[in-house]
Image 1 (cartoon, rainbow over the protein chains, first blue to last red):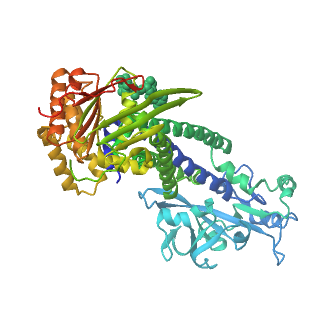
Image 2 (image 1 turned 180 degrees about the vertical axis):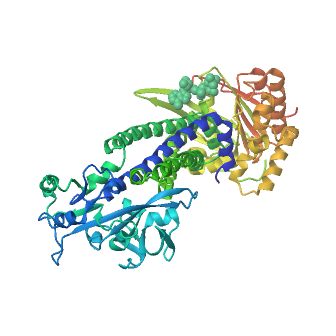
Length: 387
Length: 244
Ligand SMILES: Nc1ncnc2c1ncn2[C@@H]1O[C@H](COP(=O)(O)OP(=O)(O)OP(=O)(O)O)[C@@H](O)[C@H]1O
Ligand SMILES: [Mg+2]
C-alpha cells in the first residue's frame, strides 16, 4: 500500500523554505517558458504572415504607413500595367489597389475606443494578398453597404455576421468573417473599394497598390523604374519588408537575443529546481531506510517521493503561469497602436499555459526521479546509517 | 512449547548458523562477521555487546532481514531469511519484525499516533481499526495522552516509547533494537528497559538487542559478546532465565 499523500504535503509544508525555493525555481522556468512560447508564436506569426516576398507594395514617397499615402488613380492605372507585374489567366494584372480608413470602435474587453482599419479592396486583392480566406458568411457585394470582418476584429470587438457597422454616417452590414493565416489583416475590416471610396472621399486616388511580381528577383528593377518617375513620387518595397519595418522597434535580431537569454535562464532554473528536489529527498534518506525496514516497498517509496516532487512542481507551474499572465496586459496596451499590434500579438494562450504546466510536471518527475531512485536503490542498511 | 510446526533446521525463534558477512570495497575484502552461530528461543531476550565496529549492527540487520549474509543461514520465526526475494522479505518484515532504533527514527511530520499507524498501512485494516490499534499500542507504552503530539514535542524517552509502540503495533514475533537506550539519560533508559521487560514477559515478544550499556544487557536473559566478527563467549551466560 502507498504512503498517504498527507505525508508528502506535510513534508512540503514543514520544509516550507526549501519548498518555496523549489516552487520559485519551477515557477520561474515555467513563467519564462510560457512567455517565451507566447512571444515565439506571436513573433512567428508577425514575421511570417503579413506580406509576401513575391509582392511589391507601392505607396507615396515617405509614407511609413498606408494611411498617410496616396497615389492618383491615373498614375496607378499606368503602374499596374508594368511588365514586371504578373497576370492572371484572363490576362488581367495581379495588382490590388487599396484604400484605407480608421474607425473608432469600443473594445469588447473594456469598452475602450481603439482604431480599427477599414480597407477598401478590389476583387484582385484576394488573389494578390494571398492567404485571405472566408471562415463564415459570404463576401461583400459591390454597390451594397457590406463588409467582411477579420477574425481578430470579430473577437476583439464582438463584430459578428448581421451586425451593423457605422462608417462615416452610413450603416453597413457585416456579411462574412475572414482569416489570413494570422496576419495583421485579421485585425481589419474589408469592404468593396468603389463602395467605400465614396463615403471616405477617396474617389480620385488609392493609398497603396500591391503588385504580384512575375519574378521576385525583379523587385529591384521595378523599384528603380517606378521611383525614378518624378511625376509619380512613389516608393516601392517588398510587401513583407514593408510590414516588418512597421512592426516597431523590436526587431527580429533583438527577439533572437531575448530568446537566447531566456533559454539559458530556463536551463539554469531547471537545474536549480532539480537540485532542490535532490536536497529534499537526500535529507530524508534515513527516513526512507526506516520506511523500507518496516516493509514499505521500493516502489511505494519511489511513488511517494515522485508524487511529492510533482506536487511541488505542479504548484510551481501554476504560479509560473500566473506570473506569465500579465504579459497579456502589455500586449493589449501595445495593441492599440494599429500596425504595431502584429509585432506584439503574443498571448499566453491556453495551449502555452498547458504546455507550461506539463513542462512543470515533467520537471517534477525528473527532479524527483533521480534522487528518489537513488534513495530507493540504496541498501536499507546504508540508508539507516545516514542520520 | 506450543504445538507449532517448525522446520527441522531451526532451533528457537532466531537461529543464526555459521554466518559470514564480507564487504568488498574495491579489491579489499572486509570480513565483518566470521562464522557466527547464535540462537534465541521463542520469548527470549538476547543482548549483544561488543566494541564499536565489532559487527553488532551488521548481525542485527541480518536477523531483521534488511541485509543478507555472504554465507550461512539465518532462520527467524520459521523462515530462512537469507533465501527470500527482496519483495517477499519486505512483506515478511512487516509481519514479523518490529524495529527500535537508537535515534527513534520517527517521521517528524507525523504525530505520535500517525507514526504508530504507519506499519498498519501495509495491512488490510480499516482507518478506524488502524487508529484503535495505534491507541492500544500507545496505551501499552503509557503515552495515550501524547497521541496527537509531534515528535519534536516529545522528550527523547517519550519518542523512544512511541517508536516502541510503532514496533509492536503489528504484533510482530521479534523485536530488534539497536542501542535503544544509547541516546537517553539513565532515568529514561531505565523506563525503556522496564518496558522491554514487560514486552518480553507479558506480551512474550522475542527481543534481540544490541547495546553498549551493561545495565541494559543485565536485563536480558542471554548476553553475548562480539569481537572482530566472532562470538567470544561460546558458552552462554544464562542470566535471569526462569523465575524472576
Ligand atoms: N556497507 C558497508 N561497507 C563496508 N563496510 C561496512 C559496511 N557496513 C559496515 N561496515 C563495516 O563493518 C564493521 C562493523 O560495522 P557495524 O556497524 O556492524 O559495527 P557495530 O558493532 O554496530 O559498531 P557500533 O557499536 O559503532 O555501532 C565496521 O568496520 C564497518 O566499517
Ligand atoms: Mg552499530
